[in-house]
Image 1 (cartoon, rainbow, N blue to C red):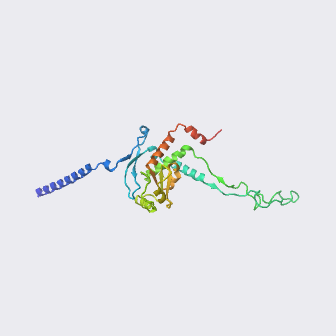
Image 2 (image 1 turned 135 degrees about the vertical axis):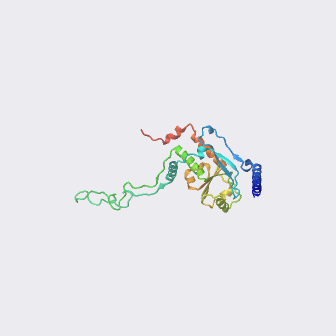
Image 3 (image 1 turned 90 degrees about the vertical axis):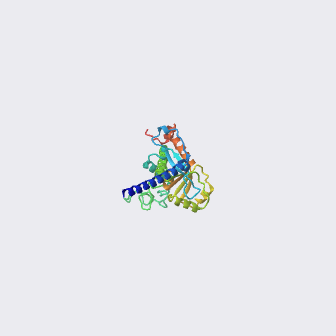
Length: 286
């Protein structure tokens, strides 16, 4: 009985070795470089002083509905992996809302209200308080004292580096929440809006998408396809802002746009004329 059991165990061990040897052969035949080529890897000048390693993001395509991983894109950690500052994001959003808001509430003063030109009663002799017009703010139907006068803008300027920090915080939040996608370009094979909707559904993007390119002249097909879709918008890099990124669920950047954003923001962090830039925002205490 023991001999039969030993033979069965030996056969099972031999079958296990064959399966493992077959898997090893298949794994050695396929190299990782053939499957995932490194598309865009940049060596930054300040890598020796960075506290974090550059982030690696998949480079995707838009020419097919099904997602294809074209390679890796390295992103600067100070731009796309900064510590999210919710307070700075809120300051940027409030600033953008306030400079777009103009109040048109308006009230009439005593000079603008119709009537009231005659003195209501004599100055003296009746024992009543002296008045010169029934359109005084003291009377019902009179003018309004210190009321709102239109148009009233609510514009104020946010400090320069607070705006820069808002962009880095918002980009980092999008990357951390897996709502940031890097594509090679914005070329799509058709101008039908259904293609964009299928692409969003297939790739599990959010209901609203913001696509950013390095140049303000977008490809023809994607411009026509997104023209009738109100929740998919196109934007050049120079128009990128915190409010638009927060309003859209998914942010799609082209590789050139991501590199341009890095270049612009890294320059702002290391510019030597920061005192001149911050001078208009300094509070005068004299």
